[in-house]
Amino acid sequence: MLTKTKKQKVIGEHAIHATDTGSPEVQVAMLTKKIEELTKHLKKNAKDNHSRRGLLGMVADRQKHLKYLEKNYPKRYSAITKKVGLK
Image (cartoon, rainbow, N blue to C red):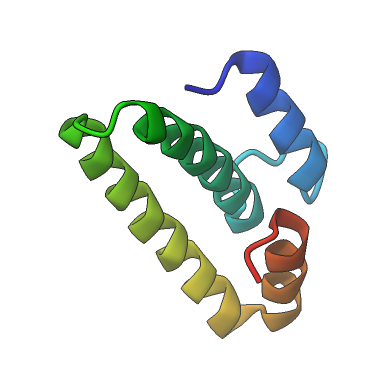
């Protein structure tokens, strides 16, 4: 789970403007951070199937956001994938 300070840090790094909290870039970055933390949890707790299902939902949601960016804003897509470390 992301703490408030971690969320603010991620939002600050990826925000387009000062009050940005919902742009696709911020959402992809937040989902990536959550996915990383949940992956660490699942390595320790291999039988936690409820969390595994949530992880798969987050991965699918991130993929939808990335697909939207790739289709409509290719430059922003390539920037966020490099910045987050997906490609």
